[in-house]
Image (tube, rainbow, N blue to C red; front, top):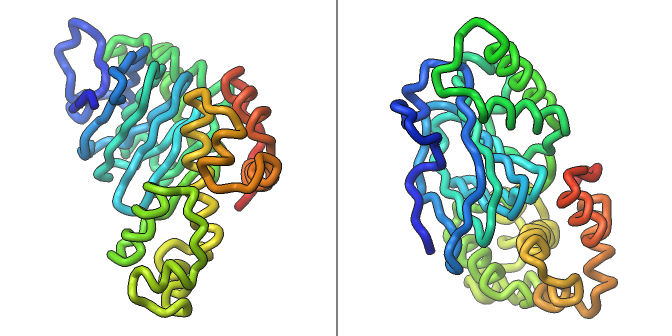
Length: 279
């Protein structure tokens, strides 16, 4: 896997550390064609907040508290100081926005995936064309302010997998990720980690805020979006996730995200994010 320690920066810029750029926002972006193993930004953090927006491809962002999936026309917001890693596969078009915390006090203090409206997208792309040290007074600053206003009201999407701190639950998470088709019951998983079913159910709710079934379903959604964005068929995704047939998988996906897998991905790739349901 190709290792990257920092995101893309414009050529000939003297300032390459976003934390040192004395502006409310700094946006960079473009295309990355990774090797077959993918692209990875190893665990790091910034003083400034960071927004990672995808126009093509899918990224996964992991922090201590969970895993976020970023499909096309979505972005993940990472508050300043949050240690995180990012990885993606294949051809990726990504834009990254760094935000001075004092300039945007209304932005969330927790990681979240947000849907990117056409207006927010155009503002972000426009800011990515600015020089690093754009004028502090003038049209660039006004556009940057509008970008922050639009980002503050961007709808949050439910594309987050809570990751437990408990070692026993991490073993289950690792096991379900390695073999998502494994349809072991809660009792069977409890036996594998040496706990009672009651204890396991209590731990999952305590650490993730979800029931065991909802937690496993959320993992399946994360994996399905990743595979579908790489061109996998609905049938193959359903099989790999252990569903008896594609119809059962489609019903689950529609209930979770408000559209069938085919419609959801078509709208994403067309740049028209579908409405999502609360989970």
